[in-house]
Image 1 (cartoon, helix red, strand yellow):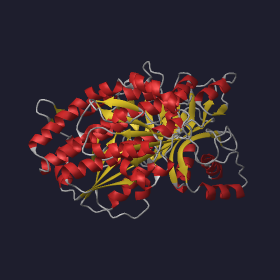
Image 2: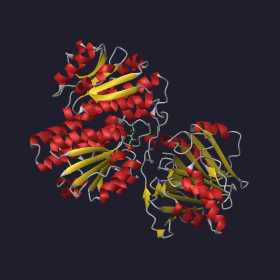
Image 3: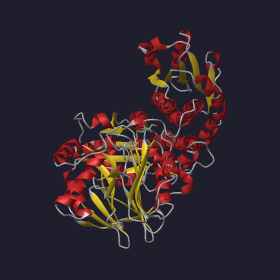
Image 4: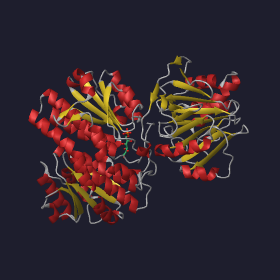
Length: 614
Ligand code: F6R
């Protein structure tokens, strides 16, 4: 959370910084701010509560000159969202300004110490403590900015990506990272900084992903230098990024979320490209070739993830257990990391994360690594921290996901889990060759079937107004559709702020049934599978209590329409792939309900796309 942008070069910094912030707004939008060293040598800091647009309005009559600057979009952790707590933060003398993504855990101790030395603080943030500490050691020990940053970071416990400017040295930005992402872009006589590459790719495709514990010394007219906090020079690992700009623009849709829902057929083709051989109906994952032994000898699979990625993990569990006969557990990374779990070297731990930066998932990986488990990552953001922390893995390749509510990443994750389960099952001989080929073939047909599912968009748009007045909704499903019920409910909560719960349909009678009345919309995933008849009984139970049912059914279904208030018809597929299709109407439902309610779909309140704090 929190987005960081920086620029130093010969161009005007302000437009580059603002555009960069707009790209990174998915990381947080509680406040935004910019610090620039002006043409006359002043260090100007401007900040505003709320979104980047508020900042640009605030800056409209300010001095925005200068070719060096840093900027920040915030997701609040310490201190309420306000202009006062917005970054950048000045040091006491106003010579330095800092931006920070992460949490300084021992900030209170450092702050108390500095206060006894007479340092006054202007904000409630942990970040201000860092810039004050840097200035304090700089003055006290007569150090350069770089040396002072090294000393300060040595005293700090926590996670950070930071950038600091000093108005007395306008040709330099010092940046550093530990557990929060930071990318340096290298142009012609100019450098860029970003929490990811999206603010940089308009200007250069040459980037350095800073490693944990490293500092970047960015000096105009000199080569980029990267060193450890202790000052050991590090080899520069310059990478070429290949992100299509069109992929991060809205492309004619009103919201990124809608665009990303509609992209799914293409995304899944990309996800399977080069991995599924259509003629031979065969899946090849490079991880399976390189680490065959480690993966095949797994006695157990443990999936760690958060949020939507955790829901994908629940589907993975059913795939691994039913197809591969490997016991599988799915853990919230945030719980797993703190509960002293039993992990052994016979375990394969699969970490699922769209952003590849989720702090709890990273910590869970660390813990599992220490216990000797083999770690497999399923991520979207290329070069992010999780793929770098794992032994091997598979990218989902669905392109940048900007809408805060995850959509295409979910189906990408389920697709990779399906491919991995099929590979393992085939190698372990737990499914027949015939079943394997039939399943691989069916997986390749999913994008086409998703196209069909997307045709429900207009129907769902028409239905959505009916649900805008609901205070609570229930989502029901069984088997592979149960995690989907959880996911449908999460989508609705996140963007429409309607309380929603996902439940295994049969479990409803053990409690939630008490809530059902005519005010409570119930969405049931009732596609044709082994449990179809049982789900029909569950629908009857809801109807008997006056509940209003909207059912997702398989084409050709003639039964459910007799008792459902609304039906949404979907193409048929194998039971285990149903979530790849049925997720689409659930995403669309949440989207249209939120739009009808006038909510900011792409930037829901209190949320951030990348949760880099625990
Ligand atoms: C929901 C959503 C979140 C994320 C969760 C994990 O729409 O986006 O629940 O799924 O924060 O994020 P990643 O997958 O980046 O680790």
